[in-house]
Length: 500
Ligand SMILES: Cc1cc2nc3c(=O)[nH]c(=O)nc-3n(C[C@H](O)[C@H](O)[C@H](O)COP(=O)(O)OP(=O)(O)OC[C@H]3O[C@@H](n4cnc5c(N)ncnc54)[C@H](O)[C@@H]3O)c2cc1C
Image (cartoon, rainbow, N blue to C red; front, side, top):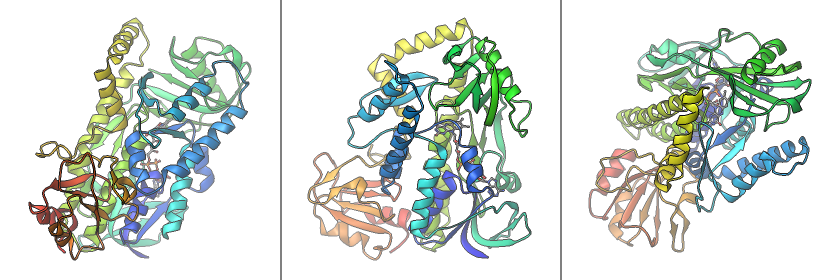
């Protein structure tokens, strides 16, 4: 078996990366160890997709099917609940429909009207997201093989070799480890993974309680967190106990019962348990996302507590950042140094998320001092500027890949501009090519892009709010360059899209 790029791990990040590569004309092969049923079993709890992830997935037309999946899930959730006045689920649905929710910070709601025309937050199950991405991948012709566990990898300088658990061998030009937090690819590549160890244990289970009505969901329960307020049948706890002693053994009804009792301070009884997961706040970061022909993306590159719902968002945006760059390098259209911008751009973004999730864990700890800290922060969040800052941080909308660029537009996600007569800019990137916006009708702008039709599409028309004659947008939606047509556009095209 030979392929351009071998992706180890067909979770959300591996699937999206494969789609991005295929769209850019490269053949990826995804090897996934698990089978479909195993993936549904581990998909406990909800996953929230934040604004920047939805901007990114929206470029490829994926928000609509994800929104459909979300509403189907909420219909199911509502059907499984007694209708009551002021139900938390009704409140959440209202917020999601109105676009009011900016997520939360350690359980403190971040409410702000985005005023945007598309959803800025979705909540769904991970297996629903994986299904939508798998369908997108199938539509593009991506090959995904389930039940294929990679056991060994080697970078041979001019290519990589992966050996499967059953002894089969796959050769590829590049290999990307999208194989989750315990990544074999990361371990065997020797990339250091440094950080801080677990201080808490989270457990989520599908469990039957003897008297669910006797248990109250609380972020500030006596021994941590207890939650049974969203997905019917699921119960979740968080305890600040130094991390799970046992990571691999399946959770039992006894373990879940003991945890609920410690966290809630009640004598709750768990009658049976169907499935359960444990997680922690083990927080670590790969020192680089690339070593030779081996790259890392998603949880393989960074792990942290899921409090605040950021890991998946981070990983999906890694995939969007890497896909088009790796494709250009594999196709021989850009030099390898383009790949260095992947670590340079994404590492600081993840470092910030690691910092804010550590802070969120600290704010969850029980005790009167933390109660007071939460009250102080809640007050601060009433200030519009503070709230704006936290919403941008939780949603990745403050990401700036070029903070030193003379024009603030550069390095930022392209604004939701409508081009007169040519539609929405963010809807014009669906084929995975970059976009050169000729906003002043200058013939030199089109001339500069000549010979790169396969990588860059030119779109002409006026935009009211733009303060540049031309704007170059990368396939991941970020602005690579903005300026006057005759300025250094050709250099920018060469740097980001290879010579014409
Ligand atoms: C309770 C909980 C709630 C969460 N909530 C949120 C949230 O609201 N928002 C958010 O952004 N994030 C959330 N997260 C985090 C999110 O689930 C992860 O960040 C996300 O799953 C990472 O995706 P990934 O594709 O990088 O890795 P994974 O989802 O772990 O996928 C890795 C894949 O690689 C496969 N694999 C592993 N080893 C091999 C091998 N050797 N060979 C082949 N295949 C292999 C695995 O089977 C798996 O399918 C939550 C996590 C938990 C536990």
